[in-house]
Length: 281
Length: 148
Image 1 (cartoon, chains in turn orange, purple):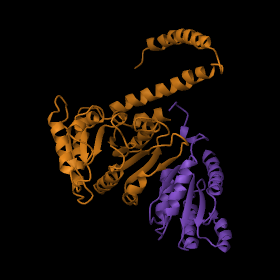
Image 2 (cartoon, rainbow over the protein chains, first blue to last red):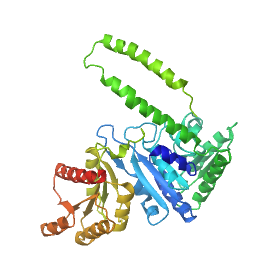
Image 3 (tube, helix red, strand yellow):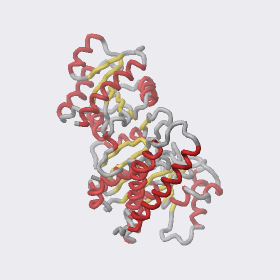
């Protein structure tokens, strides 16, 4: 079903919203979406929360932050549990994004699980990656670190009403001043719920980046690649890796492992060569 | 994402439950206790927040495609507000989402709530395990209807 849907995708701008837990991602998305809906956009929100590694349960708390923005407008919102996926997304996020894109939403927000420095999967899903930060999270050294700081297309300092927020903004501005060789000039914007007009500058910046991606013909590009990669990995795991792992007898000797590795390895690579020799597209 | 397989329909998918206190009731300590208990029982838990209208509760349940909506009220308005939620679900033809209730509900109201399809109706002091067992049973019924 998904492969048929892909023909109808590629119109929506997918905006990844990432950042540490409790920084205000959900509240921000709620407020921004509500403004965009007023402007006539059709907005969809996918918000991902963490599943318990022990019980598999999850408290999907994103919705409660944006509940007020959701009633009676052009906004659809769905909460997803990450179900053990790492990297800030859930396995179903790529398929869900495709469905919402095909359904004709103009903007799709994907909110990651509260993310750390190495939760970078969102960059492959989103056309525009927005990193939400706030006051008191670190100094200039944090701001020039590798990882999540590099994948952001836009930066938001949320909670601008708090003390220290201008220092946080300055640290990011200094870092961005050192950006070179990036085709899109990255910017930082401050937002606070105390002054709703601050959301307008964020909306304008997101639109600017969306236009940049559209003009360079890159909307959806990373997403298709990611979808294909995830599909192949899934197929490989389901058809090859899992069944083979099950064939190892319990309490088996080391020799069995090595035999299996040798025979399977050879078979696998021979057949894989046949697959790879086939021309695609 | 293997073509032709929709993981979300797998039977072993976690139960998705929406907790809601529709109407005017700000006492949400109990609902947080339940939220954590359901989470620890392996469910995916949504809470509708304070003061949602019955319409918002049903909208949320549909948009999130939950298996169970758990309604709670401590203000005595359950015969009005729970009924409103059940009626809205019926109007919209939703039969694959189970409704359960709880709170300070007098025994004499329970049969009429049951007749509306709102089961459980547990009060203070009920062991969490009893509630979890009941919710799980109702969720499995709802899930079977989704799989039709």
